[in-house]
Amino acid sequence: MKNIRIIPCLDIKDGRVVKGVNFVNLKDARDPVEAAQAYCREGADELVFLDIFATMENRKTRMEWVKKVRSVVDVPFAVGGGIASIEDMEALKAIGVDKVSINTAAVKNPSLIEEAALRFGSSSLVVAIDGRKNLPGSNLPRLEVVVKSGEDAVGMDIVEWARKVESMGAGEILLTSKDADGTRDGYDIEMTRAVAEAVNIPVTASGGAGTLEHMYEVVVRGKASAVLAASVFHFGQLSVGTVKQYFRERGIPVNG
Image 1: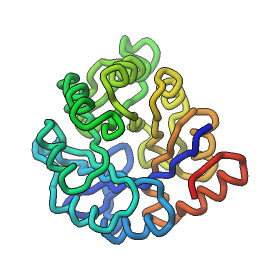
Image 2: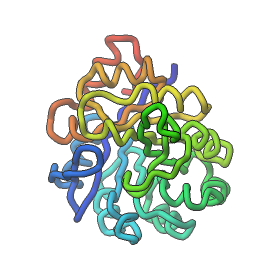
Image 3: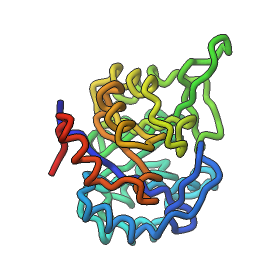
């Protein structure tokens, strides 16, 4: 097993870190620059910055927000939200963003994945996949892709989509369960494992972290290569260091 990465996520709205449940009912959490500095000090392996309303508001990522956070980050820094073209990616790379994350734009225009991988390299490209579970007999995929901050279901099977984005050059997948998001009831093990076993690129589990056990389970049972969390870090229930120590004690390799 390769070292498991621990990744705090900064969901940004109106220049502030926010967090909700199932992608709605957002609450203010903290200042993004302050949060980024704290997580770097704690030993975060990476930071993810998501301008969560960019696509919904039909606009680009707010570069001024990204620049402020980038200026204090000394770990790999990934940015998503409103990225819909190679030009958008170039603008982010120009200010020092290490990885770009695309979601809705990739579903609408899958060739963007291939273009980005060729232009920047697969290691710089994350495809974010948001998903939900459907009931048996619904005539919908059991695990279905959703876009636009979970507002729109697209009738596409998550595993099939994951295989496709890998084949087109994505370097990793950021997988978020809309059903689990913000609940702190645990990651969606079924969804995570289904995707992780279907591809050979790293899969980051997102949505539902509430305890150290949840993080351990999504690595051991869900086969995740990284664990991403927001609420438990922002509101002080857990720290990056605590997660890493818990993993070490259980034989899970981590950095630092």
